[in-house]
Each structure stands twice: as C-alpha cells, then as structure tokens.
Length: 70
Image 1 (cartoon, rainbow, N blue to C red):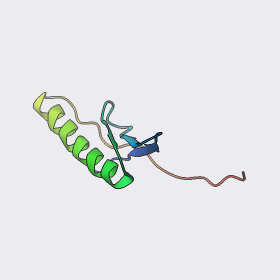
Image 2 (image 1 turned 135 degrees about the horizontal axis):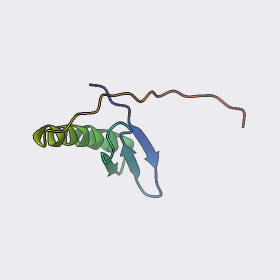
Image 3 (image 1 turned 30 degrees about the vertical axis):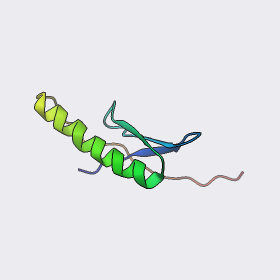
C-alpha cells in the first residue's frame, strides 16, 4: 500500500501524519528521520488494526502542489 504523508516544520523539529490513518503521527529532528519514523509508525498502526480485527483504511488521499504568485 502507498499512503500519502504530510511533514510539517515545527520550531525545533518536524512532525508527520497520515491523512488516511487517523492517529498515526510522529516527530523527528530531520526530514529524513521523520520519514523513516512515519514509515515505521504506519507499519505499527496497520499491524495494530489487524490484531484488533479492524478494517485497514485504503489509501485515498491525493497529493499535489499548486504554484501561486506571492
């Protein structure tokens, strides 16, 4: 499965979340660390859903960028 992730810059670190998996979040010092940690968080989250017999949400979020004049 391929889930969209959002990484945001905070004051002293980065935070990431997965729109299609509510509650699946992490933080890291660098973008690279945050990407690694959110991948691990997704795997852990899905494993927990399976163990609890819950439905695993299908990836449905789309990501795109738009250019705007500043």
